[in-house]
Image 1: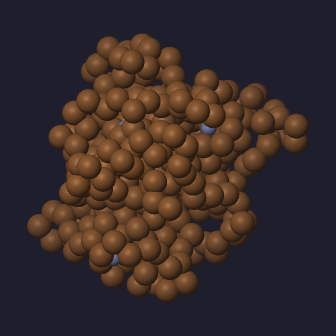
Image 2: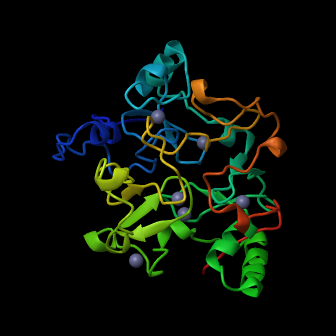
Image 3: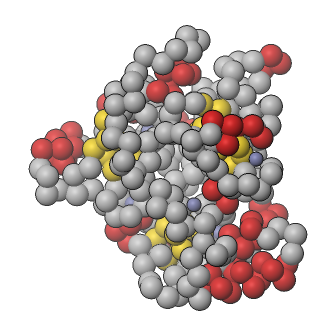
Length: 298
Ligand SMILES: [Zn+2]
Ligand SMILES: [Zn+2]
Ligand SMILES: [Zn+2]
Ligand SMILES: [Zn+2]
Ligand SMILES: [Zn+2]
Ligand SMILES: [Zn+2]
């Protein structure tokens, strides 16, 4: 069973304290391949990690989500205890169980289990668990050339592997270098947008409650050698201090959202799940077409 323990809830701490010194050492195993922030609330803490291949970590029970107002997976205490105490027990999330993953560009679910003909395909980067429709990733990689995008999409659909846009700076287009602080990437948690630290737009601020009511959008010390950001495409919820949390869709489930804020009827079936407005601009993806998309770079 994979449990990551990050001793201090870092994002909450960063949100609560003006004291910028980090009291917590990075005690977690740096070699672990799972995400160091909860997929739902983007905060640190104790996680349960999906062993189905999506590389996501989740706050397991309500108790672990209290600090960050996380809806969590809502596991029962008994199940959580069993998972922790039994090495043989594995947690597999619903997306991995049903091989239905969301495209990180358009937010829609697509089948991911087939060796050929998958609707969404996972980025080849070993640390990156995100999936994309070939068409969605192609449009992101070749925004200025429809012909190149179509060619790229076809190659991805035929099995060409690709690095997704989160591994290059969207401003200067150069790759990341985790050993050079300026060249570390700030990666958006809600869409495939990344910037070098040196290229980070000034409105994506590390400061809490800056002048003119600007809200904090960037955090150091949550992700190893990367900066966690919410890019300017996403509105920050004042109470949550993150964008609204409707970005995770499990198959046969409805978008996870704050219970008190949920005003929409439950969605059923993956083809009824709406595109999520906090993802990349909708005009880029008017008609996401599972199975006909793609993006490759090498
Ligand atoms: Zn969480
Ligand atoms: Zn999973
Ligand atoms: Zn898509
Ligand atoms: Zn990637
Ligand atoms: Zn750059
Ligand atoms: Zn974004």
